[in-house]
Length: 422
Picture 1 (cartoon, rainbow, N blue to C red):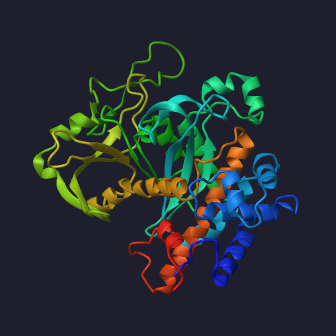
Picture 2: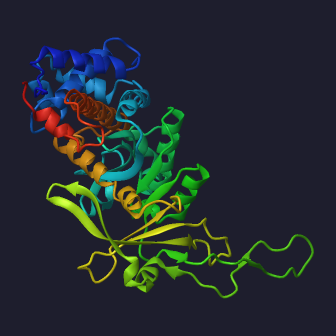
Picture 3: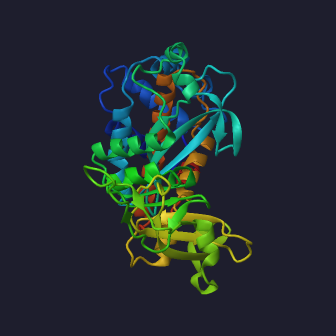
């Protein structure tokens, strides 16, 4: 079993040192390595608050000024650290999925980089907060955030002085969250991580440009969409408009009066026999079960502009037996022969990211950073990811040690962190 920090078990401490050595690249100066190790150790220690001053008090070698400088001012590159964490952990975790999601960081005031009155799914409302987009590698046994992007609202990028005061790099400009998500995927691919199916909620999946970006990268996906998303349930036939002048014929599509339907209308039009009860995983309170239907569709984004439809794909619908209306919809570029159970499991895989966020925040202080600048935020998020990676590595080691199969239900990183030495 794994001891709780502060690493009173010599074997655990040795594994931690080996892990830090494996995932930390050259940070530019040798004196940065010990403070990186100390900061991650501080995140792993028990304690209510994981900001620098409380952590320094708990660390036997804690130094507030040194840790503040390491996180907030020292110009070490954070991307190579994230790359090394992913390179060490992902092969051990095995093949899985890429899950795109976002999380909010409540803040007071207006000076913290990226803070604004904006919607946060974490809070379920518009609030003063930062929002970060993350990309996770998720398998049957674990999930790891491999990269992060801080969302900058337009009010920030339209104010160069404010950006400069927060240390935002010059080339950084406002990008929508779906664009940040595609950039994270591109980074992961340049790191050598294997291409995987992409999972995302309706905040991303409803955006046709996001889906098009995934298809352009030849990445299969299962993404949520809103109830008003338009589709055809039969392949639309293109009819070119007559050429009334010289040159090439117009490329605008004319669908000959065919009009798309919303996915909600498609769901309601399906016969009752199309819906089947599916159990997709075991939850903390028992098996998770609901009714689902699926149908092949062609999304109609661009219909009014005379653009061609998207490629054929699955529309997956969740309609619980006790609900008056369908509750969820997904579009998925999955094979035609895929089973309904597998399709549901892919669509429902986002729960792992919600677990990641809960543990990163509750156990490791992901949202406890008190600095205001771009570099400090990215350094803190990187060190938190590194700490989480160590817990996942311990989790996987104990699973192998107990001889359990990889597909069995995993112990969470939280339980690995809180167990006592046997």
